[in-house]
Amino acid sequence: MVEPIELETPRLYLRRWQAADLEPMAALCADAEVMRYFPAPLSRAETEALLARIHAHFAEHGFGPWALQRKDSGALIGFTGLGRVNFAAPFTPAVEIGWRLARAHWRQGFASEAARAALQCAFERLELAQVVSFTTLSNLPSQGVMQALGMRRDAADDFDHPGLAAGDPLRRHVLYRLDRADWQAPR
Image (tube, rainbow, N blue to C red; front, side, top):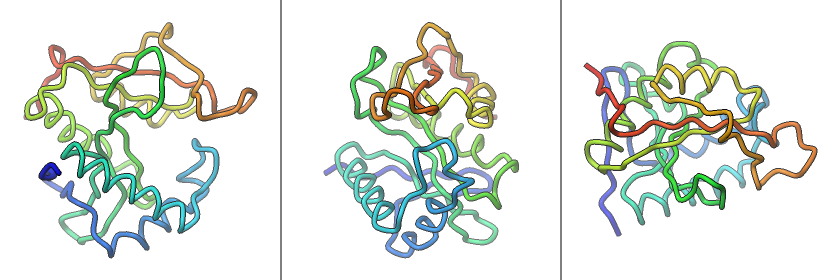
């Protein structure tokens, strides 16, 4: 077992998950608007299974999708973090960065703020050579965050997600990359 890393930004704690996080995370994952770029909202049991996979990833690697907690209110607002891609694709093996936030916390810079801290950890502490991020073609808000982080897309890298059936409108994904050499730490 690897000791999990925790991070902090001016407004957020990126921390280990706690038992009390299940209910707010289940509510977030059940929100159809939050989950519109995923196949379906998650049930409470599916969210519990997701958190179990996150715990296992942290135990094995010391990092994963961190619980995002606001410093001012103490509220759990979602997650941001790093994970080893768990399917075969032309760009794997790879570590991806991703985020999911409750609607009340959208458009306030929290995803970018947390993602910058996660990228700093990826490149400076974990010494990864590259981090990727991907989403469905229609998820322009997440693509905007990827671009704001300095990640770059090459349309030749776009791919069909193997976890989604042929004909699924969410199947086609864009891939963004950021190399450690191109990383600029937050100031």
